[in-house]
Length: 428
Image 1: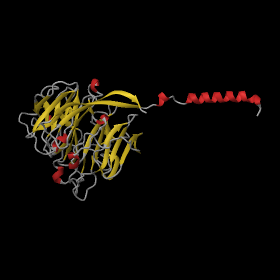
Image 2: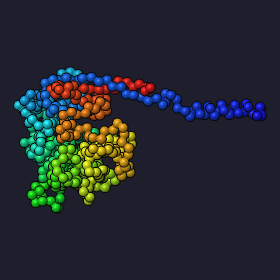
Image 3: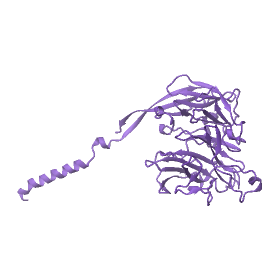
Image 4: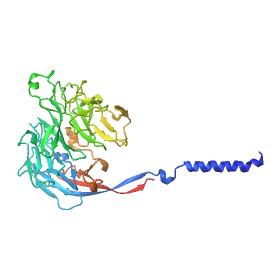
């Protein structure tokens, strides 16, 4: 080797080494962080009925308070208000002497409208109409008014109804989704006019074409429906509908429907189609993912009423999930009954299947399945991000709440548990 070249080669090596060192991220830049949570019991109560009914209890958080319901011995219905920061817990009867019928389908849902009035819906299993109460004063559970006997528009819409669920938009608009079974099977979603405290169905009457006369002459507005069922046309169906809002306040609707008759009654109550639609005018009109308008009421069948059919399979869980990715695109999760999970993302107006995230949920958190096994032993979710939080007051937005049953043998024992971030640490 030419010895005169050695200094030149060493210099070159040093330059390259320096460049490589600059391209390599520092240890601090690549370290992952792990969020820690502090969890505590906010409320502990051992006076409920000792029944699996209590597995239906869910919390609702509004403006720094947790609202929930319990049944006391004799099925006495009580509404509970618990301050997130601690303090006096209130427990008041929904109505003096009000008793819930002994049927776990007859759970309750609670929500607040944009003026702070507390709404309650429940005690329904194929009820003729929605049973609905509203507090006399905002954020006050001391007295409720039963509105369902004050006129059809004073209660959320729907006939022969079960499984209510409230949804609240970022602007405070209140909606209620519920299964309807008369005269057709489907999902009815009502919107509250907070100024008049009246409700209106988002949808229209189904077209009379091909419907039996006994059904066609009794048609009522509905949001989404199908004519299939378990055991044959217009048989039993367990549909599900949920509402979601992205960062731009666009409303997204997700519906699970049965669009093929089963041979007989099915214990798992399947769906075949997971439908999607969005609305930019609070539900007056709906569109498919590509922007085309959907005629109402929407269906899974091809035609002008057809919503986006994100997934179709025999058979699927009707309780699909919807979340938004880092680009604010809707991502829908679906579970095939006794099969795999699937996920789809809306990309340039079309649905594309993607690999499911390891920690993703593929069922709706607010769903109330009829499956008796799940009603008896719900699977606990230990991830606080999947719990309920206060989306109305930024002060409490990072406080997560859930209902816990400390003992399966003592279902009369119920707790409200809260969890909130305390610090971050570097993962090893």
